[in-house]
Amino acid sequence: MGGPEMAPHTPQRSAPPGKAGGRLGRLTLLSPRSARFGPLTLLSPRSARLGRLAPLILIVAGLLLGCPDPAVEAAAKLRVVATIPDLKALTEAVGGDRVEVDALARGTQNPHDLEIRPSLMVKLRRADALVVNGLELDSWAEVAVHGSNNGRIITGAPGYIDASRGIQPLEVPSGRVDRSMGDVHPLGNPHYTLDPGQAPAITATILDGLARLAPEHRATFERNRQAFLARLEQAMARWNATMGPLRGAKTVAYHNDWVYLFTRFGITQVGTIEERPGIPASPAHLARLIRTMKEQAVKAVVVEPWSDQQLAGRVARETGARLVVLNAKLGQSSGPDAYIATTDANIAALSAVLR
Image (cartoon, rainbow, N blue to C red):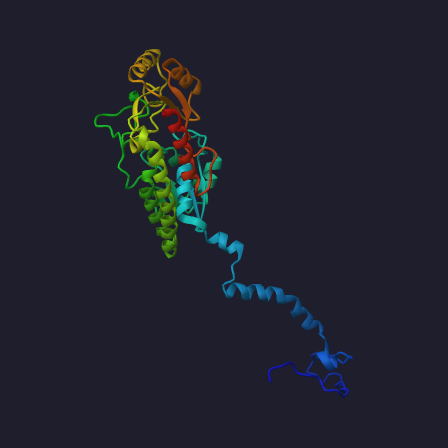
């Protein structure tokens, strides 16, 4: 029952022409193997055409039955653009394989003043979500968003994610702020991503933003986030053990990038090489800074890759401090674990010059 129909072992008389309803039937030939394996069947032209369609039929059936197709899976991913590499890595950590993330700024670029190019607008045009640093660090992104003509990621749209929500900013000015004061941020210091202790709040905001667009994946995003925070907690134990004996050590920074990181680990910043944020130092300012550094026995001068390392080196030599270049925006690292890897490298380099 249910097996293939076997042809009889007696020769068959062919039907007269025109008696088969206008169709060509199957012509069954018997061979010595037929006795063991059944008849040898030749297909008509119409059947052959159906046979050639079989692979396509199987593909369609596979899709209907839920078999994954790479093109379909790629289209199902949320396309996210982050303004800076830190936020790209943290978004990848939360989104996992449900997101495709790109960054506007590279890890070696100063995030304060990125040059707006058509290529940035192209990235934004196809984005489902935009993750911004906020606190006016990346206000240049508004120009690129406007040029992209993508209403999904404008301020207030579901795809607009301000990662500073939930952060308690440091150094919020109490008085009037104007351009004569340099690149002062009226909403507070915007470099909070450099403090790994802020990552739980940042990733919570990113999770909420992604889940707004893909609520069916909220549980997956939460699992990814918890796994990342578990790895971060292990790393924090290492960093606290390394930096604990160095609490109270004194540094000077080229730009005021590091206040969140220094505050986390109890490092004292006695000044900056810039006289005012974003404005080159005057000779009088440098003279005062060098005198202060000698008086307070400053151990390290911290500089970013894009700042004037020659000037920073001269200040370090004149004061007996050691120069250290830290990655303010992940450097060449990439991927969901780049945030922890970069902080690892920064803590190792900083602790080495403060001992």
